[in-house]
Amino acid sequence: MEGKILLCVTGGIAAYKAIDLASQLTKSGFEVKTAMTKNALKFVSALNFSAITNQSVHTDLFEDSDPIPHIHLADWADLTVVAPATANIIAKAAQGIGDDLVSTILLSQPKPVLYVPAMNVHIYEHPATQNNLKILKDRGNYILEPETGLLACGYEGKGKYPPNEEVIYAIRCYLKYPADLTGKKVLVTAGATAEPIDPMRMITNKSSGKMGLSIARAFALRGAEVTLIYGIMSESIPYYIKKSIFAPTAKLMYDAVMEHSKDYNIIVQCAAVSDYKPVKPSTQKLKKSGNFNLELVATPDILEHLGKIKPKKQKLVGFAAESEHILENAREKLVKKNLDLICANNLETAGKDETTLNLIRAGTTKATKSVQLTGNKFDVALQLVEYIVNL
Image (tube, rainbow, N blue to C red; front, side, top):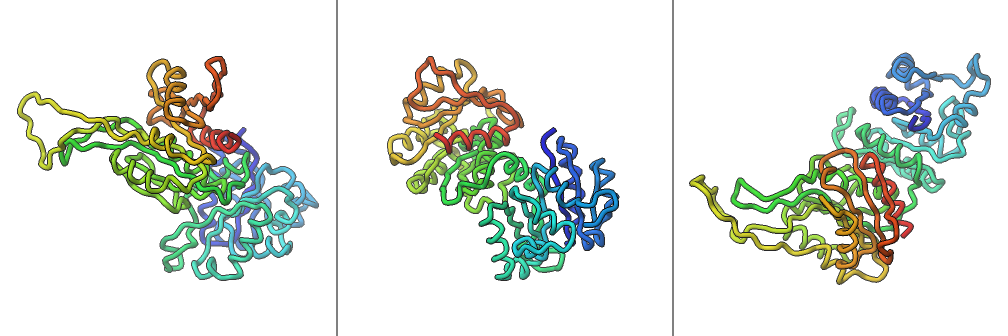
């Protein structure tokens, strides 16, 4: 079992999305119990949640079956998640008001709570709401900020309920790790670069960008200020990563990294950067006319240059994707490029959701065993971030 989640559903139009959240969590192996406000019941039925989760649903502070459900539910949960979180429940939680089951659960919960705000943009941006969110965050709770987009009320702006996939990423993070990296600046590169042969053809690789994106997501959820410099990727960038730069060639990625590298506490170079590019890419599509030779030239080595110029307090992390002699090649790269840590993996994991990383830190010898992380790329990313922070 992944963990015990108490899902608190409040009375917003996004309440119907909590049904899908409960479904996805249950399918992923979480045990989910639900608490609902009276207003939530005007949007969705308790039956939806009990049928999907095969667990109890609670709607009343004074239940016949349990005289103190707010205490027992709070104690039961590994993580309490308020989704959607209306301005009303946020205000009650911030000000210590307990006048129904959900608000009283939040008062009874000594552990951090994850709030997923969803509301009209003006309500979200109102100073009272922002102040209440700050109060909750300052107390150690987690806030997964809403998306910006078209809202149910017809307004355009910040207040949209986020994709449930991102809510689940946040849940998986906060079950094990706090949002304790506020003030840290992290630069992550991800994805594959592509070197043009002509306007249609290119030299690239099998990297999906999943590992780099998982690392950026993990740092961001833990509170760090993340800049993502990326090439070609198979997945979209999380909306809460505020600064991202598209750099689809080795030269563009080199320029972007060099421009931004100095001011960061941590740099994780996870992108699969092309080692070679055509000397003279054609400006017109090449016609097929038998065999032809393609002359290649080496691209700039971003990681090696970073190793030469990095400040003393900056942590530099590289990746080594290998097909053979994985640890030996990684150790050589670690030393040659003056890294603090290298993550060695097999090329066979490219594009897949699962991975195995072998972590080798600077100063270790050949006799030192590498630290091995295995599993889903996001879970591995969470462990990797913790390892990097503790270097």
